[in-house]
Length: 345
Image 1: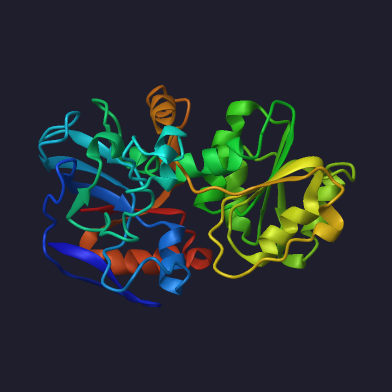
Image 2 (image 1 turned 90 degrees about the vertical axis):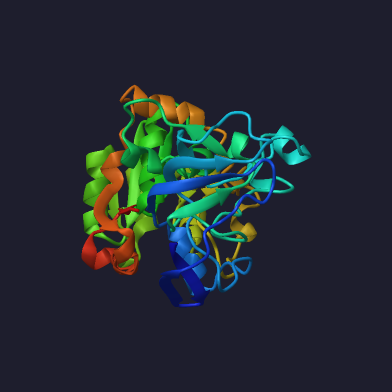
């Protein structure tokens, strides 16, 4: 089968690899119909994710059709259309019983990381009963690909961890796909202000069309002052970091109000300074999280009821044969104006 293979930092290739086989009774083999590229894949290519070794098929998002299941799979059968969760969960270990599927003893974020992923014609899904979601009849598969990862990530790691509440003020640092996913789902809670911060005016204009109330271009180095001015000098109740570099986390430290929350989403590959000399007395909460995808069933319902339209995040479409071009487009978003790229398999 054809698959996109990681070959070490900065290297990848679309090549023929063996088709996956059932390895455990609880596995399913899924024929992938659509997948996409995540910012985390770019972090892997930068060498930021040590658990992903050369030779790995990348990708942890997608939808498809079940081709075969192990004898221990009770919920799905061949022919079922399914949404693939970026997190594999056994549902039985101590972490899963706490709802921390990302820390599953035999799962977690393994797809496209420690086992082969979804940027391929077929993928093996461990713990299929608790790691796949049935696609409702008539659902838009492209929209549902956004529910594999970015929508639950923005919601759980940003909005929920950030304690967004009615009437609160929120700043989201980074208007890429994850930041925009946080913007879309933050509106569930009716905050009074959602301030989007980015270097890219195009992405800020997209954020405005998605519901941002204020825009701040941080290119001049004065974003913190701009946010303070917008909040009468107080800062924001919730600062969501959605990039994964020291400068953006430091900005969150600069703009969070006393009693506020910094919710980190970004994947950090280098150390970040924590300025406790300023924050120690400010009653500030700092949260970190890897998405658990516990919110996926709820998000499925909001998409089905048309309360949420994640398809708006898709800007470009490619075939699997052109996935290397898709990476180039996604990785050069400043010039291509890419958000999410859809890859049809």
